[in-house]
Image 1 (tube, rainbow, N blue to C red):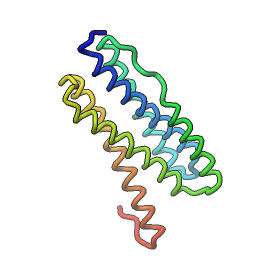
Image 2: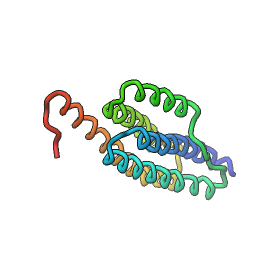
Image 3: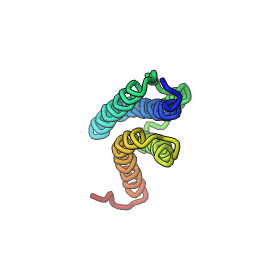
Image 4: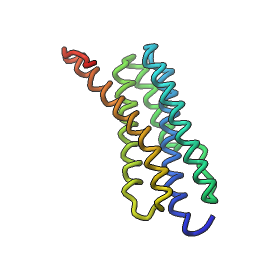
Length: 159
């Protein structure tokens, strides 16, 4: 690993960690939901996030670094808390809210990386490609959350 790649590798490893956290979160959400539709959606998003993390890991290797291969301890503790909360509430809205909160965090971290002037152009393009998937997942969960809130407020879920 060269000194010129250190910043890129560090940034990518941070994104790998949160992306793996997201994949794990979706996998847990798939286990927690009683909705077949949400289960399928969450499993698909988990798979997509695993792929994004794998692509970022490949980039770290190509830069001469050692890629992260595990999520954060904080995320594991958060998921354990949510498991308890969901067990108490037994509420699909709580699962969706939890996933959407995670989506806010991952989207923000990717956006910070895209604004980082110290990243090389090649690494920034890699982050931009990964961000496309992250943004789509975020927007989808945001829309589902808002639709569910509208439904519980007596509104109609948009198509």
